[in-house]
Length: 237
Length: 341
Image 1 (tube, rainbow over the protein chains, first blue to last red):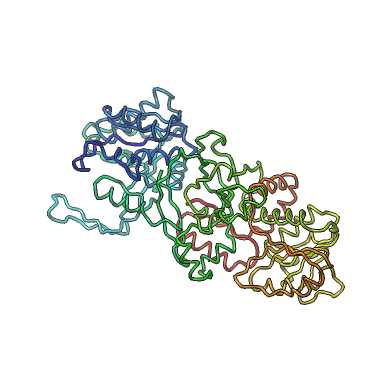
Image 2: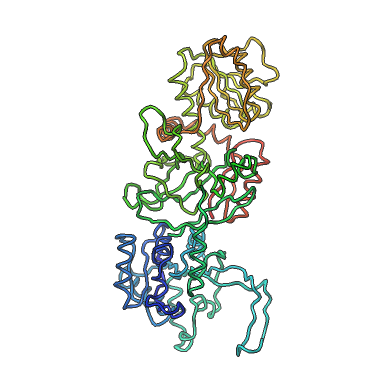
């Protein structure tokens, strides 16, 4: 089985003074999470698509999906966890409880606030996850990355040609991801902000799918303005 | 959903546009799989249309020949994964007399409206025709071009007189090949002669009854009806040669698109009482007939495979440009993009 997990469990603290988490704000007159979900709905390889949201926003998520998309038996709204990886694991727990997990099952996890994802990126995630078991999506770094341990003084300037900027989707063989996650200590789990690191910490390879620079993450009011501007190009006559 | 549209913005320059679209509107969502480049696309790509046309029509997604898989149909008529050919002509009104592809109000993908170079194509419900299993996708990609010839033969059949023993097809390119092949299929007992400029191209017309180089056509050669599939400024020489070799009261079907005004020997058109039939593009009925015809005659697909020139997988804007450039230097056949972007 091939699953998608749309990660919409953030509370949107970076979006400024609005009462809606960022994934529920509108872009082109539709909630951002709906745009993202639709990109997965039109990809016919998914058996189930889980939308992982904070418990207090589950009703809202179900309402807007019903309003904008209607009923689709592939879509399930699931309660998220404490943090990103906790939410992914809550989704996987739902899969285990309802469908069971088999050796070849994979999950394509994606930020709900990256609605510009393309068919190719999703397709290549599926293919590479089936083949390799762990996949990240990334683009070559454009800016020079500098490293600083205290935020005041540079400790290192890595070679730019070896630097990439991580995006999503991130996709995994479910059994592999769960097994490696269970091997982590509580402290390791707490500091991890990235699902691929669960795999790379164990020394296992994570393959890279080429992302797109426009596959942006909408997390600040600035991002939202950029996203709106991207969509408002002049229409042909 | 945010849909990526890969638009030509200037000669040889593509950019991505992002369009917010509603999945629930009454259309079928198709993921393109194989797209075929047409000479009309190249006229935009190279900027050989006049400046006013370029300014008026761009930015615009190119390509009007292509197939895909149904990705989503809110109405549930088409199952996801159904292989379909996409119809580029989109009428906005019905007329009991005028065919949909001649209505001036009709929209045409990649001529004033976005073509098929998109992440997903949103088509009105009647603008897809299901394909049959086993149909070679490289050939299926240019079903639209076959449907243009099918349409022309349909117009010919309704308008020309009934003696249909000898046909002449002028043009040794893709349209000439398809038209001659269809003539032999619809009129198997007829004599089909092909007139072209290039010997090695003419050798591909193995199904034809005769082939002639246009600079060496014997005076004794005559046809009941003729199909002009040359296009460009070459249409002029072709039409006038047709007029010389066609029997009185024959029909000349014009399929070749020209950017230039073509001078025609009207005196002989009058003296011979000829009928000139213009034919352009195609409509839904022609697509349905084309798919049915190819299903009934699988050997046609074998012949059409000869037209498959280059097949390039496209995963980026750079791949698109490279494929259009390769097509420009291909002397024969169709260039097909495996759409993996």
